[in-house]
Image (cartoon, rainbow, N blue to C red; front, side, top):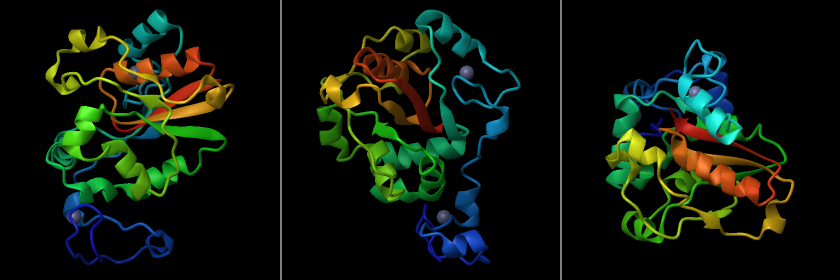
Length: 222
Ligand SMILES: [Zn+2]
Ligand SMILES: [Zn+2]
């Protein structure tokens, strides 16, 4: 079998799920790269694993904006995940888009009557990277999505900014579709990593302002 992440051949006893799945699994080494978040023990706002019902950061979002985005995340953002992001997003190894296609597929195929919308990247970033890292993963996971938002101008990568500076960033998105298209629709925004939540909340605010019924989010890591 070929690993969905490093694409090396590896031997493993197939489970029934592997046998019927159209998605490849990961070799032992790549399996160790990603630590799943236990969904029963996570914050209702951001999806981080915690014993608190709503973490301090999310209590602030709730106070500031009057709602919680209800993020769910697959994996802990740790060294292993950071390595994947580095190789896939920053070094541009597009094959890594399939690394956890199976997990994304099973998570999002349960979502019904909801528009799945990846967060957009700016045209400059698209030009230099050659792909939207989130849409790439959704396509690998065979999940249909719609691009509802545009990010017209570029900005410094969030990773280079201090938390406080990130929280003060202005709205980076504009609508790509007419308000009619999202009126009374449920939307789930997808991003690679939930860091402060600022970008996702910006997306949610804009969509809600334009008539969406509800906006939640799903990220590959938290
Ligand atoms: Zn591997
Ligand atoms: Zn939280």
